[in-house]
Length: 451
Ligand code: ATP
Image (cartoon, rainbow, N blue to C red):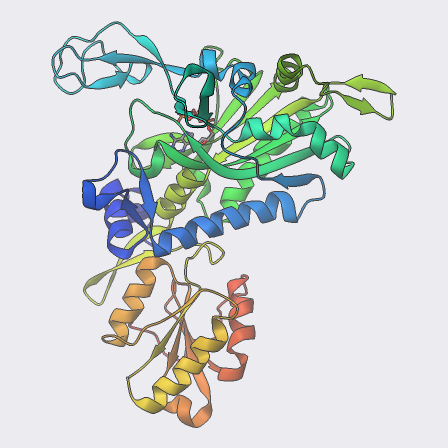
């Protein structure tokens, strides 16, 4: 792997790969696109799905102290009064008096327009929530908002979850879903968009244990990225300064990733104290306290919130996996994606389009796709087909050649090393299963693959 190439990947290369190979397209492209909205293509949707599955597996499936939820995007408008979003979810907006471009004043380094140098207006607060109307009449009384975060759905369902699951503290609720923010300045591809997906945990604990749980979640969440292949040196923790802290937070750390444009937030982890349950109890008039069996007291739990973005994670995984190396005088582009994240787990490639080979290859394809996303490719030279799979991060290629017709074996080629092993066709599934879950690909290569 070329260390330098992977560290210095430019955003244009990622954008171009995503466009070219069908990971991500501009939204409504035939109409000229819609600013900061993106469509995930055939490979992108698989990548995103795999990220969400890996997260769900780590935080819900493999734990007995977190349960899932899927709350609706539209919520009672009072939710946003209680949460503080109606009043406080705003960024300071300035406009250039000359070119009329708009900027977030807290993002600017100087006092002038970064585009033309013109004079800027005084900042005014701009609420980031999208408004719409419920029902046929567009009036103030029917205003609802597209949620700007998934978190509130979990707070307002706290009592429902406690009553139906009998969970005792400490326990959490996890949710994945769309969120919408009318961001002032967007850009950097899918890093900041107006419609995006979040993966959030609200972890309810007794006050006094909150610091310990906060530290636990910092470590847990950092490790999740590392286990899925992000290089440690591209991650860092950054504590919010007092001035930066959101109104609800006691402490907040960002997990930053070294994106092509520099360090930026990948996930935020906040100790929200009892702010949310107190607010919702007060605005709804419903009790949201918790009866502590040990002390026989009614208490309001504290909340630790690890809040991650699916799209930012996808961008970080793509940037970290991207690599270029020189193979046979040509640039080989590789996505070293973790097998759990790779959109396609294996590609079946008959060496030629001869009928007998195709029949065997198609049978293998039909068998393997019962288990994973597998693709079939018989167009152009085998070298080109390997390159195509390397570029989209497919961990394994299964090649069927003329010898396969005699010895009933096929070749598995591994993406990163280009090493190859020969495997009986009826053992392909078990072999791939083991390799996809991390078994070393250390068998002597039959030959050094030139690709
Ligand atoms: P930023 O400071 O970059 O605006 P934030 O602090 O407002 O982000 P949070 O409210 O903490 O973000 O949201 C949690 C996570 O949701 C972020 O870490 C990020 O991964 C994701 N996220 C937030 N806003 C966006 C957006 N506009 N586009 C894509 N992902 C986003």
